[in-house]
Amino acid sequence: MSRLLHVSSGPYAPPVPARELTAVSADGARLHVEVHGPEGAPAVVLVHGWTCSTAFWAAQIRELATDHRVIAYDQRGHGRSPASPACSTDTLADDLEAVLEATLAPGERAVIAGHSMGGMTVMAAAGRAGVREHAAAVLLCSTGSSRLVAESLVIPIRAGRLRTALTKRLLGSRAPLGPVTPLARRILKYGTMGAGSAPHMVEACARIVHACPRKVRHAWSEVLGLLDLDHGVRALTAPTAVLVGSADRLTPPVQARALAAALPACLGLAELPGIGHMTPVEAPEPVTGKIRELVATYAHIKEGA
Image (cartoon, rainbow, N blue to C red; front, side):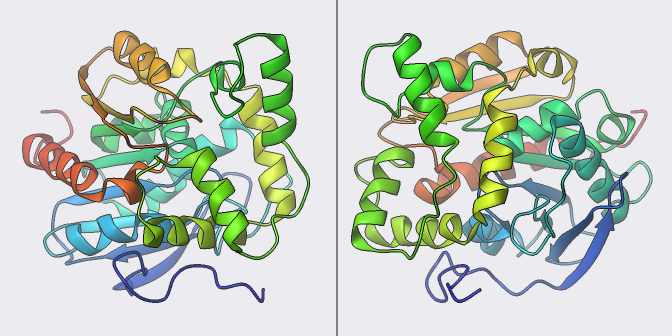
């Protein structure tokens, strides 16, 4: 691919992992996995969202890897994980289980942080044995469990059938995104980020999103358009914190509030003023701080405790 997959300098340039491996999912799909930080340190698993990659978590990885073992992987078809014809919430759950099995010892507990489709991945896998074994606590960041298209605010008109139809057409577009141009940055910033996002944040997100293959982007948009994981929210029994930006147009605060109300063990909802959908990039310190807090409180708990 001729386009740069991510920025190459600054706080959002991906750190070099301590090691890389391939996790194999239930259907044989191969997933690129990175491990950062010292072996034996408390574990954190980072799950990125639609059209992103491990590079999306660069700020969190750089900060946490000083004293945590940080595990990040590319969702199938994203980043360095090959595309697969199988795209569903079940395959998202399969993939997360495969990564946990490949990177954590039996009974080892980790804090799992999922952004957008990454949070949906955790919800899809909530009832799985692997997640119940390994999830000490969860951070659901800028995500939702159902009605994503109907409740999206990307199209600035009154809620109803027309807005839903236009949103579905926009998010499911098969059009190539092309190179990262000033116009492309403005469009991406409007749809996914808060008005106050700094240019270097917009650039980092644009490089990652524009690198996602068009067919992969469309295939997963179809899954998200039909998403219904309300049952997964009720099955997520690990202590779970919810975080959202007040200016999130893709998964607006109404989504986060519904999650907080339905989770069996919700630790609270934080709404970040002026922040859009790309919270780990737009607000790296609050996101990293919440992960650290969850690790300090819950990650020492062993299986069966």
